[in-house]
Length: 555
Image (cartoon, rainbow, N blue to C red; front, side, top):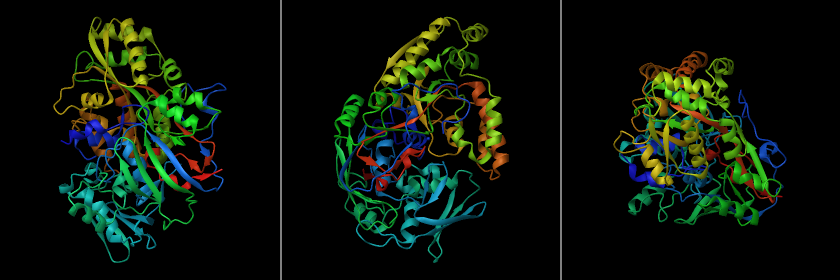
C-alpha cells in the first residue's frame, strides 16, 4: 500500500478528498445546485447572487499568482493526483477528452470519438499538436501515456480506473483504440481524468534514465498544454510559462507567467486576494469568501462536493442503522450550512447530486422524491430511534480537522448529548485525519468523522461504488457492508443502457440513504475568488479537472 502518500494529500476548503485521492491513499489506484434542497444563502453580502463566469477583456497579463492550500504531491500524471497537484497539471497536460460546464464531455486531444461496440472505444487524435519543446505529438505518445497507467510496474495512482482495460493500441490512421475486458459504464469519463493526460514518451524515458523521480522538482515533464513547467520550489510555488506554440488557437492565451503559490492559511490567502498579491483561488469556503464579495470577483457555480458526517459502521453502537439515523435527524443541518459555509449551498439527501442525473433525470428525480427525509431536523423521532436501539448512554469519538469540520463536530456532539450520547471531539491535523480515515490496518478507531466528499466525474456511481462497495477495504472508510448493495454496484458498472442502469443506481441510493453510513450535512457551491482585473474564467462543477488558464485575459 502506498500509504506514504497520505501525508501529502490536501482537499479543497479542508482536509477531505476526492475519489481519486481516496484511491491514492489506499494504494488501489487511484463535483446547478438544482433539486430539492431547502436552504440557500442570501443577503446583500452573499455570493449567492454572484455570476458563475467572468468575461475577459482580451488584455495581456504578465503574471497570474494562483493560491493553492498545500504543496503538490507530485506533477507526474501517474503519481499522487491530489487537488493541489492537479491544478497545475491540468494547465500543463492536455487530456484526450475534457469535462465541460454542463457536466458533459468535449473534445480535446481527440477531436472525435466513438464507442464501436460495448468494449471498444476509438479516438481520432489530432495531428497538429506539439509538445512544449516543439516536437510533434503522435498517436503513439497518446497510447504510451494511457499505458503508463495500465502497466502495473509503474504503480499508477489511477490504476483502478484502468483495471478494465485489456489493450491500448493504434491502427495507423491516427486513431487510439481502447479495448476493455468487459463493458464499463464509467469508461467514457476516464479519458477526461489524469489517465488521459498526454506526455512525451521520449521525454519521460529521458527523465527516467536520469534517475530522478518523474514529476519531482528536478524532473518536470513536458506536456502539450498551454503552460509548461519552469520550476517548483517545494512548499512555496510551482512556476509555469506560456507555450506560444499551443495548438488551440481559439484560446486567448494572454497570461505570460502562471504561478501556483502555496498558502496553507485561509486568512493569509484571503488577505492576499484583497491585496492583489494573489489573483485567484478555488479554495476558500463560504465564510472566508463572504467578506470578499464586492471587493473582488466571486464566482458562484455548481459543484459535486458535499460535507458529511461519516459513521463507523463497524463500531458499536454506530453499527446499528437506527443510531446513525437518529444522529442524522438530530443535526440542525440548515443551521450548520448558515454558520459554517455562510449559507452558500443547500441541504441535500443523497450521496448523488442532481447535476449527476443527466442520463436519466426523470428516474433519478422521482427516486429522490421518495427517499426518507434526513434534511429536516426531527429530535422527537431521533430520541425514539435511540430508545429503540437501546443506545442511550453510549459513547464515541468524533474526528475533525478544519475549522469548518470542528464546527460540524460541535453540532453533532451537542445533538448527541440531547439524545443521551456521550460524544467527544478529537481535533487532528489534516494528515492525521487522512491516516485515521484510511489506516493501513483496520479496524478504524473513530466513531464519527466530519469530512468532505467530492466526485471525480459527473456519473452517479462515482459517489457510490468507491465509498460503499465493501470489497474496497480502504476506500469504504465507514466500513459499510450490505451484500445487496455490493451485488447491485457490481451489476450497474457493466450496464450500458442508461434507463436500466438508473433503475439499479436509484435502488442502491435508496438503500444507502436508509442505512445512513453518511449523514449528508449540506451540498456546497463552488466559490472562486478572482481579481477584478482578470476575466475569461467559467468554472465547471469538476473544477479540479479543468483546463482554465488559457482562457484568462486582462480587463
